[in-house]
Image: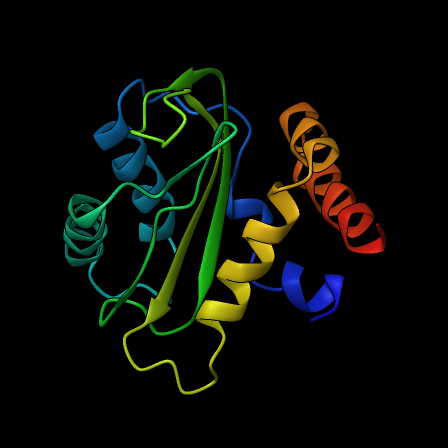
Length: 156
């Protein structure tokens, strides 16, 4: 997967510089609301219900200040990703107990015929495993800066 292929799942309308939410459920709601404005989401309430159910199975907080809520849903017609930050951090039941500051919400169609979902999830996890990538992501102010930080991560 190239950087440009990776970035095709994102967009300026799915970039949140600073989350308003202060709780885990608030984050899930805010992230799914961003997707609700997307024409590829049929039923935003169904999408939020799916994300909440997935989270109840086990936290998608990875540790090191990162959470990647994700899932497949009949509400989605295409795979999409929302990127968001929280400077103050939000408790997300991460295994290291640290609050999460970097969030990626991945939503894919229930039937992922293009097999995009798992490779995309894997690439995000690989990228945020690097401290330098996390620090760059925490400093982005615009979608363009986010895209450049991701391109740099792909070059490393």
